[in-house]
Amino acid sequence: MKYRLMAVFSCLLSLQLAYADLKVVIVTPELQDGMASLETMLAAEAGSAAFELAAMIEQLADKPLLMAGFSQAATTLGLLPGQAMPQESWLVSAGSSVALCLDDYSVDLAARLAALNPEDDLSLGLSAQPILAQLSVPLGRLWSRLAGLDAGAFLGYSDIAGSAGGVRAISGGLNLGWTLFGPAGGVAVGPADWLGLRLSAVAAFFDTTVNMVVEPGTMYQTANIDPDGPGPLNSFPATIRVEPSVRAGVNSAVLVTRLQATTGFSVLRLLTCLVGGGAVLGSGRSAVNIEADEEMFVEGYLAPLVAENGRIQISGQTGEQTALIFSIYLVLAPALQFGNFRLTIPALWQFPANLGAGVFVEMRL
Image 1 (cartoon, helix red, strand yellow):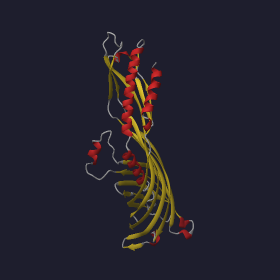
Image 2 (spheres, one colour):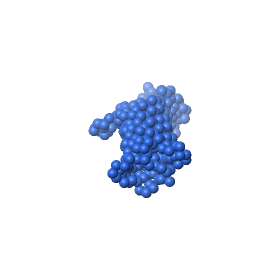
Image 3 (tube, helix red, strand yellow):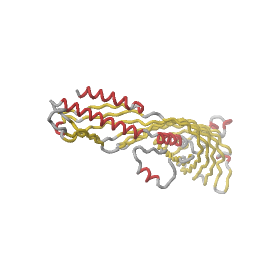
Image 4 (tube, helix red, strand yellow):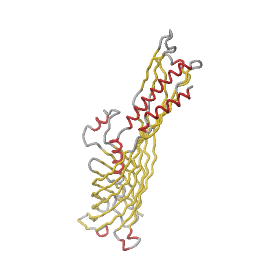
């Protein structure tokens, strides 16, 4: 009986929530032998509890502004690689970067986030690339007629998970730059050297998933169980308790192209600082992946009669949100040079309220 009811309720809930593309499977609580009729009544309440949980999860995940914010953050993340001034030799680097899409710069943002309700939706987003490797090649070293041109590539992969969440990121891209009045022909101004003007173009893709655990609080489903219908026995309340812990992952995938102009200066060949800006065009999509596997507990008169607790399993994905993104941005990239090594810390502001930063350790070959 238990598994037949499980299939029926699964079918019903999938039909009710088809627009959210959620799959719901219920294993109803099993009572001791000889209580098949009570078990059937309890199964109906288990189905109602599962429906309420699935509806709540769908409400938690239905966040078009939030998903757009994650796509915006992934676009900002795509602007951080390749922000170092090229050198006359090959350059390899490794580092990490993070980007935020903010609703605004109001001082009460933290308080607003703390007071969010499950149905609230804000234009906020987070994207990160914990591990990123880059290679830059001065093309003039390969052919003198290409002096001033440089090409590069970057690739990143990370899969970091913990009990409270994690980040999975895959990225890659190509860049091409043209330096006018480059380091070899820079203009000296006292102890400082002007590094000239560099024009660059980048094409990249970023696919990031930020996972988190959402605990909306204990849910109860209570109903009166009448074991003999119109018979002489009194009905009694039966309560099903679920303590949901929903694992949600916001997946964002973007294709990014950017055009950028930067300039800068070097002091005593120890400190360099680049400043500049550009325009970015990106195409992004985002969706929320849902997974929950919760135990159902029975409370009240039937609690001592339970042989095995039930379970509710919910998995699926919300509908995808797509966006075409065009924006301008400003970048600042200070760096410290130590022999053949350089530490670069690019920071970026993208209109209207996106922020990005990275840390890269570079080595000249």
